Length: 521
Image 1: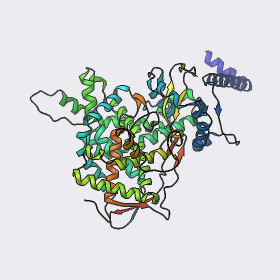
Image 2: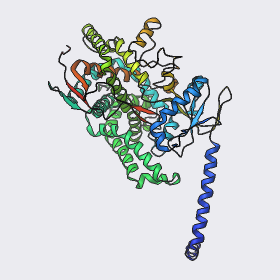
Image 3: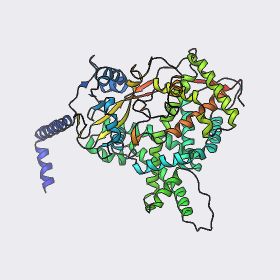
């Protein structure tokens, strides 16, 4: 009866109804805006001052503001805030280096890594970035313990997949390298953190390669076209979101028989000798079952973990690999490249195969990689967190609940206080540091308060040493089996691509390759 009376009233007074609804919407907007403003830290607000302060400007030109913010505030120990290009979120806060130790040691209940990923990546509707500390710990621990044992398989897989995607030819062939290297990374990752059979399953590899782009595209489309209060419906009716969930479902279906077979083998009678695989799925199964809660590791949970590993590893590693290769084939680095190849030949003759010990001898390659990453980083900002509660640092800086905080990695890399002649590409910069100081420091995968390319603290990339060695193995193969150059008159690195705080090597660049004219045995 009440609904019928309401409908009658609306029909009788349509103009009044529109006015009332408009007032309600306006009040709701004001309340939400004020609530959002109350969550902003009391800090200098950095913005573009030339008249264009649009969302698109932040998506494509944030690097300009980062440089200003570092020079004006961060290098002097002052935090600042600036607009999040995801306009509905509160401004992001950028912290100077002096806060890094506190950020590293703060518990997840106060400054959260996973929740940052959820907010920035998927707006809390896919859950894909919600990776538990437990699963990360398993991969971290077992990769370190098993890495030397993984080398023979990695070396063989690396050669097979590169030869498949870059067939040997005496003539120059043009190729777009990014999709190829993403496929190479996906196959190697599937073999290590997944299972060997997944590395040969192109449907699985397609899901793993596509999850990052699909999720981000769906998140952006959802924010642009759906009000925040309605997004819970998107998974049922909005095609981009439905596709993401369909991929998750299919990933779980692919994993189900593998998981069931592994669990059955785990509980097989002692007299039945079954050789256990050495891969990420097995590590997770054994971890969960050893602690008495194996039932928690369902195909859906395992799929979510695998998708998270794909988001965290495939495209970031591919971008780093491609960026280093761009510097190696830059004509300005021809002499450095020749020295790296000489080093590879020497080590290869000494060891015969690429064991972990052999790879560790590639000190010139490591130094070149680190210098390439110093000047051509894949992200301006690192060490990202969200304040789960109102948080106050030791010096009194107060961060309201929900604030997204980051440290600006890129500013330090161009600061003469930390690096002599910081704008100069010196391929042996870090090799000289190792020789002059601690030989175990200043490596590509090293961490310090200045070296935050892999994050910092407990949540630094757990697979950074593995990823580093995989990148080296791929570069060794490319440098010794192929001649590679830019497809065009210019033989210099093209300008990087920027989006928000991310910077990527130009993905549209074409390369020429052929079988190496002076093959290395």
